[in-house]
Length: 385
Image (tube, rainbow, N blue to C red; front, side):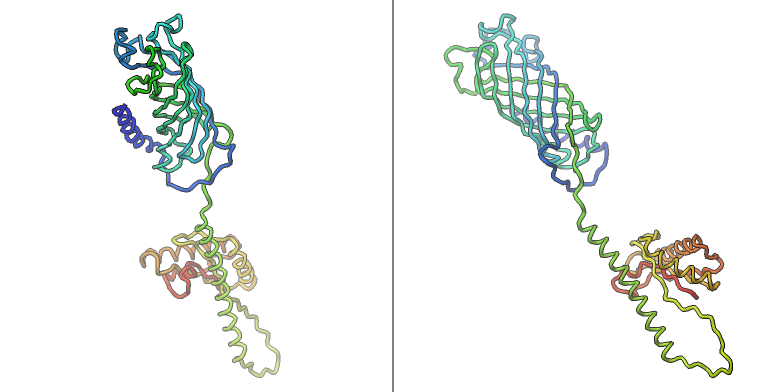
């Protein structure tokens, strides 16, 4: 038995390595599903081999473990539930036949009918160690359990334990194939009588059964797990939007102070006749970008740009678009190219708004550290020249 369990452990570790290569996946947390989610049923046919204590089989000349006198067929049904992607339970019922007569009181055809009902804990090694992946083709699932075994031919009952290795192969979201390699032990001789000691608890008199089962898996209802929201990413996105609004407010306040200073210090020359001067004064508008990107982060920024573009078209004014990158991230050459791409991206939007490209001047300022926090520097400014 020790050799068998060691073999199962080695096979699980070896095959789990191959099973991960089908679809690479990054580990992430999953949300807990309700009680009615992640249920499954299975149905299969098995081919098994049994052997009993030496006292039972002595003199029967049953042969080795894979002889016809030991091998026979069986069938099983099970229902189970996954409580997490890596841990589940199933209740499995099996009816199989023992292909030898060890008691002289068994069924007329010389085959003993055995009913085996087990409650088993399932451990999906792929999901536990490689991360959950709903499209993984092959899953390696060791299991262990205990339950009730009954000799239907001799009316003998026994407590039983089971160990095994369940392999599942995904065909679709709700259907799969299973290959189940199992090992069952009765706590005393159940495949046939051995006289007055048949209810003894001597481990040497335990009956054992190996089986290989092929069948289908049917996943019921909701059978996948949803990714939990990334709270930190949502917080970072909200903070970035707040930073962008604060930067626009700082730009507007600075321009407002400049205009107020011009008004206070302006002296109008005396004119005999009124002179009408057409002057356009407007604050520069900022358009913000995500780190390392030249795609405009929020289309809301373009609303102010559109208003400035309409004003420039009405007065046939020149527009200067200046791109910036933050100097804290990336090399100087990378930031120079990035700031130019950001300026050109905004210039392209101005052309779409009807501004003549000849009236647009593009300036790449490279990486700067003029604003705080550093995210304020990931922008392009639009101003009327």
